[in-house]
Length: 506
Image: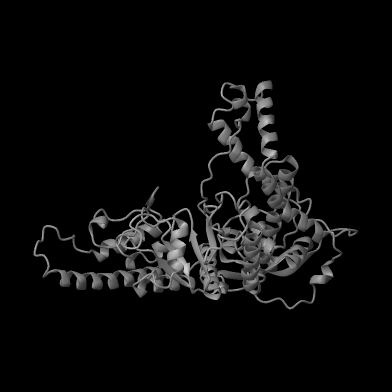
């Protein structure tokens, strides 16, 4: 009994729930190299890993993502079920997760990279999912067969040769194993390419957008340390905007002091304000522009009499500078304290599990249990990964600001003009265009349904079993409700007779 108690985990980690703003993906080599000994298998996966990233390197080295970049990695323990994508040990693969935040175009950009990789490397298969499951099906909902729904979709939806592939129930009446599904996709004698062509067309429309369409360039007036960091690591603007947008009362205290980004270079006397150009995603720009934020006391802002353009540049630079300060100081503090967002989630899960039940917060016993839990957390792999993620931007910023630089480095540079930001106010036009595209899909489906119904009329004359009439206006209204975010915990609300019609279900 005592041995069992000693070997049990007194501070269990909570089960992982997929974040709502994260895309997960996996890439499998075909045929599956399951017969290789472990060293050869590892070498094979490493070779594939290098080839895939080398293929994407020209794009990834210059593109800016809203939150996290597109990455691929090998499973930490190939002998155990994958903790990220749940692939069984017998299915070798590479995987990744991309946190896209408020920038849905980033999610679809990552999907387009998966399509491109399977096209460039014909012996690979990919799959992608998020908290909604196989979200690729949602995009082609009106062209999908009726049998396909969230219950039947697992291990049936893949990306192969740059196209969507779906395994039908005629091939697998029940949910197939992942290994069996991959073998079927790879078998040229098995027709798995998703049809009709409308399914492929719907996906291609979504992934065909030019990545540059989601980017925005703006001139800013910012402290020289901010300009230096952005000149050396342009991608760190994502962390600055995240720090600004997710600020709270505690992090605002760092912005009030500005001890790191409102001081001059080593050996200098004071900070200089310089003009520079910043490239960011449209979502980042919107997050900065749409929030009112007063400059901290002592922050050098121009007079409004100097013109609206200079004021906008200075205000944008001030928000980025404050975002950098809040992000930098908060991450450094969390690393020093050995805490972070994962610790908070872990601590709350322990409270919910009753680990502190009957203990008065602040009491000696409460502190002892909390300290034991903290020590257990610090010995976990989750802590080491969290510490590395938190400290990486801090270390890089320290390296950059230790370099020699001055305000003269940013003078005499021909900066590109700021991009037109009228798109911030023209969202209705984009929404209407999207609704027109969806209405076109509905009309095409209605025509196909009527044609199919006409062909079936000579088979059965029974009207009592006929589905209710397709209501275009009703479906259009449900789509408008969707974009207005009138949804339940399970997703977008739809008309009550939606499931009674012959529209394919998801």
